[in-house]
Every structure is written in C-alpha cells, then in structure tokens.
Image (cartoon, rainbow, N blue to C red):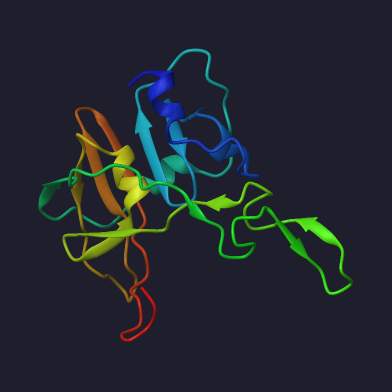
Length: 171
C-alpha cells in the first residue's frame, strides 16, 4: 500500500493527530480514525506517533470468523444539512446569523447511510474505501461487539460496527 492509498483513510479536519495523517508505530504504518484503522508494512518518511497504542489493538483476543468480500458500493453523496436546511448558517435566539456548527457553513454533511454485512451494520462511506478488501464479522464476546477484521493481501485493518438501531426508530 502506498502513502497516497493510506491518506484516503485519514481526515485532515479531525482534531485528533492520529486521524489526520498516516503514522508509524511499532514497525508498522497505520491510517484511519476512531472507527476504521488499517495497518501496512512500514513506509519510509512517515512520522512516528506513540499514542494511541495501535499495535495493541491488533493483538486482539477475538478470532476472525468467516471472511466475506466487502460488498460493492460507492460513497454516498453528501446531503443537505438538516440543522441549517442547507443555508450554511443558523440564526441564534438574539437574531444574529452564525456559521452552522454542524456543516461548518458548507450547507452539506456526510450521508450516514448504513449497509449490513454479515449481520453487522457499517457506514457505507467506510465500506466504499474498502473495495477489494475482505471482512470478517466477529461475534459478541463479554457483552461487547468487537471490531470486524479486515484484510487485503498483507494489509490488515479493523472496522467498528455501528450500534443496532432500536426497532421502530428512525432509519
């Protein structure tokens, strides 16, 4: 995997340093955020971060189940911000206009469309990044739903499933 491949998993607007750019740690190079993390062979010139301890995340006691191909999909288009109705600003109770804090004055936000894979749900935009990968849904252990295991060649990853929706609630 190249540095440009890894950058697709990063979010420069995320306030956490480990989510903004790929980083190296413990002889590996990582990229991702708080829900999706991929690990590949070391890439020269990538800065080292010591926290969080990502190497420990891959020493999981959870064993993968059956491997399935990540379903074919593309990232959904952004949608109109429901907080500001796509205007990019909101009016406070004093009558002043302010940049919308939900869409950062853009008027659009990420579509949180979900997809089911192997009985677990994930954001479609994350699965779209993982085309050509395989995923293994691991069963509940100790009352917790562990991250799904990912693999593509020698590269591996973890993807946190979404919490189940309440029946009868909004979709």
